Image 1 (cartoon, each protein chain N blue to C red):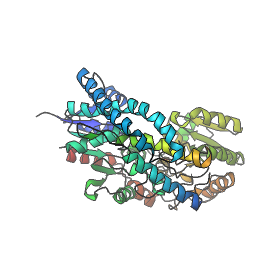
Image 2 (image 1 turned 90 degrees about the horizontal axis):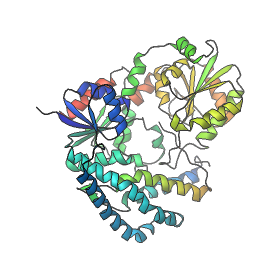
Image 3 (image 1 turned 90 degrees about the vertical axis):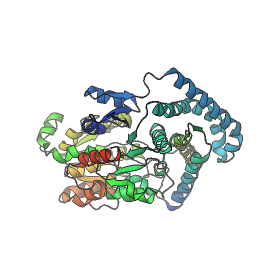
Image 4 (image 1 turned 180 degrees about the vertical axis):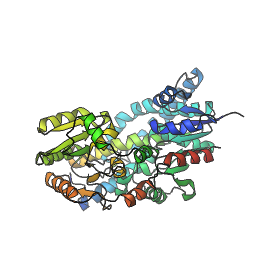
Length: 391
Length: 67
């Protein structure tokens, strides 16, 4: 029997799915890095954008030109719907914007037909490439499973229907936990198409145990001093409502707070995409004892006593699994397990001191709310769900 | 910029809803029966939100952390 053809997006979280299903499915990837990642572990995967047949490429450009000409003809009427201040820029930029992006989206549609894809598994359904794959699946009557890459806590700040993440295109959802299930149901996702599976990426944290001393040796941190770890973040322009005072400002205030606590070591876990150099330079200029690390998330979490960061970063979930103290700058205000502080020096300092003065919280209710039972079985549940959907 | 202020918050909520509504409806175009315009909302709403912030707060940033 011919194997089913599954289109995948995402990063290392899809590896367990691919490993478990490789005998029954052929894999296709929306993006080259996903395909390479699987090929590196000897799982064949075709990046759909590789070796594109000339006729499809040509057709995608023809279709793009057709749509562009229609849109540009209508542009004067379209811009009248915009606030005055946005009209000139929109009118000036939209032709180039369409020229750049429409061709790619058109080509994806044609390629998914070309490869006769049977089902789609995505890590989000709102970014253009992922959304077009979900829209293609919907138009063709195929199933599209969305397994979210985050718990989406912050987006609750705005009413359903006002954030791009509220625009649901996938047909099925592997929800992180009850909170996310309710979140999607409020936004119109059919309840019967949602299953609470937990999130694959947390399984390894549930089973990794505690090795703080070893982690501190690896990072050359003092084994006897308190270590406070700061998660950096990035600007999310899709939502106008966020925490006040901004990500960069919060980091500066955090460093000021830590300056008043000289007996504490500071560990900053950043990413290349979080303006890493700026965080390094700012930490260096603050004059405090501080280590900025762009990788080795597990080692950093193990080494930390307390984790803080801006907003509701998913890092607080991993921190809770590992039993770390947690202090969020403006995030998780309704969760007593996490101390929520404002983004000023005094508030952060008081929050960190308060956290160290109390026992480490019992995080089970918190984890059950956001990721369901922290039993290390999310991967198994997601794989079962994928098999059921795409059998 | 204080997005916790009630008046500012209401204003930004309303603008955000309008920005998204525009991005989801400004044009349509299908290829092989699939709308290829709507997926562009993700980029367009970022651009309109940024313009909103520039227009309203003179370039100060609005931020919402995720991830």
